[in-house]
Length: 58
Image 1 (cartoon, rainbow, N blue to C red):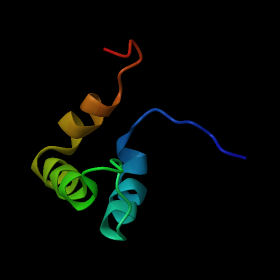
Image 2: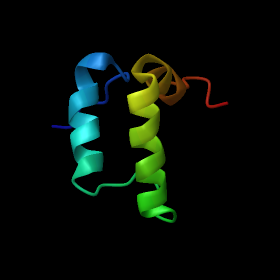
Image 3: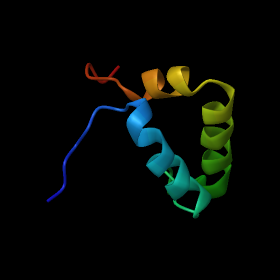
């Protein structure tokens, strides 16, 4: 069963591992988007996670 979770530090290692294995959150920009996300995680993991959580869909 799939469980949707709020972005949190406890889930970040799994997300980062998926990026490092070649998964991309963007099916158009692929590796460019992956590199940007990995850089953002490295720079400030808390800010990266905050940017992912948008319950108001802004």
